[in-house]
Amino acid sequence: MTKEECKQVVLDIISEIAPDEDLGNVKPDVRLRDQLDLDSMDFLDIVMELRKKFGINVPEADYMQLASLDSCAEYLTPKFNEAGISL
Amino acid sequence: MNDEHESAASGGHCSCECAPVERRCDTLVIGCGMSGLGAAIRLAMYGRKVLIVEKHNAPGGLNGFYYKGGRKLDVGLHAMTNFVRAGVKGPLNKLFRQLRIKPEEFALCPQLGSRISFPDAQLRFGNGIALLESEVERLFPSRIDDFRSLVRIVEEHDALDTSRPQAGPARARVHAILKDPLLAEMILCPLFFYGSASEDDIDFDQFCILFRALYLEGFARPFEGVRRIVRVLLDKYRALGGERLMKCGVRRLISAAGRVVGAELDDGSIVRADNVISSAGADETLSMLGNSVGVDEKGRALPRLSFVEHMACFDAQPRDLGWDDTIVFFNSSSRMNYRRPSEAVDTQSGVICFPNNYDFGGPRMNEGMLRVTALASYDKWTAASPDEYERMKESCAERMLGKALSILPNGAGALKRTALTFRDTFTPRTIEKFTGHIGGGVYGSPRKLRDGRTPLENLFICGTDQGFLGIVGAILGGISMANSHVLSRHQV
Image (cartoon, rainbow over all chains, first blue to last red; front, side, top):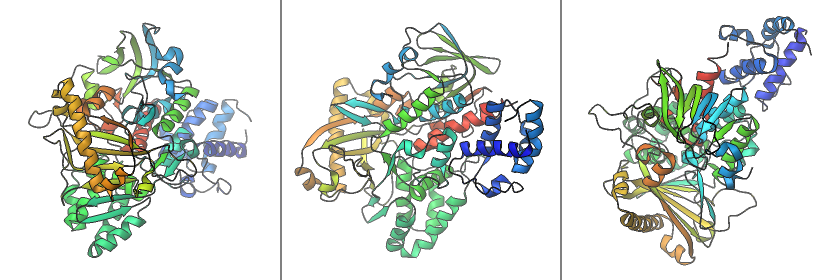
């Protein structure tokens, strides 16, 4: 999986959790919280969906790694690849 | 799903007779009301094996429904509070997100408009603060800035912050902010009736939650009433593979070494569970462990506030009789009494609701309905013999209807132009029987456990005794308990 594909996975999850958010112009280097109406309950859901859909675990200490799309890609892409998940 | 044959519709899940002697689940949820369903859906969404047990044969809990006289009647629901349009930030849309429900599934229709009626003043309010603000400006022009500061204080107060203790009583604080006793009492009146579990006061957190729910947001209702909400939640839960047992309460909780390990049900069967989330009430749940109920500093049982509600159907649309309010909160003097009355019912204050008066678009209900609710004495209703009880119901119904008509425009005259087609009354005894809440307490114990924790590390309370109010608050309360105590905790 490439980092771009990983970002798309995260965006797909967000669109499921928050169908009322416009995800057309999400800037990858800006914190998701600062451009979308997402709170801690929504971030818990991103983590839960990663686990449910892909078996990827994000320990609570690493939640801050999910702050922006770029940081998500940095953190998650190796996890996807280690798990042998491709799109 | 066919909600009319609720207990039969779920086949084997609902019959205790064919239940195996021992079951196992990840989380046992006690109570199939709004908060129990909220918690259960969240857990089932993330693959947890969940079992809901409910001692009544119908779901909904304090917001249930029943059939009588060929009519579908709601128990708790006058209005669903917290109504905002799709996409507007707030608890309602948070709930939709968390449960993956589309707003249109609830089919909420906004109120026409409501009113606070005191002898010397009438304040109208609608959805959103604008109408109330203009009414305050018209009637209390010198206090409008104080009212606006109160709105700001409410907006800035994080009532859901469970990391600090309860905020303390609100009544004196609201009086100090508004500086006009009549205005303060009028603003407090609907908030007392829609959620205060404390006599003659309300906790400030609760005040802020309710102020937002009623005045900053507003009222709505599905045309079908509460059945619609319950059906959407049950369908969601069922689609996720969630199981439930109806007409099967918990006889006792089984604990060992500071943990709950399971429950013995009314049919004698055992359920083993890693966690238990109970919506039965805090004291009610602890009594399942053999503990005595909570007491105040003088050792008296904490008081519960209960209500009598009378419903009268009539052969006309309320608006054709000149009644266009959705809800009227009334008080007969300049200061509110909000406490257990010494008589069966206290008609000095109360709530009148017309379920017809929502903007349903096309459909109209077949007949008009007036509901009137007032504070009641649990002791008087439970001490009565069966004959006395029936007589009390009749006389209270007459007094309550009479009082409502005296508050409504051209009340007595209007009712002469139509015929009453059906009447029914429920009392603290009815509420206790069907919900299991001590003392028929509609808003539970005055002592709230906002974080849901109990002395047992894996037993949690959701619902009324968490202090998140109304249908939306209850569902979100259940969701938050599932999230913080089960889902995030067992993440890794």
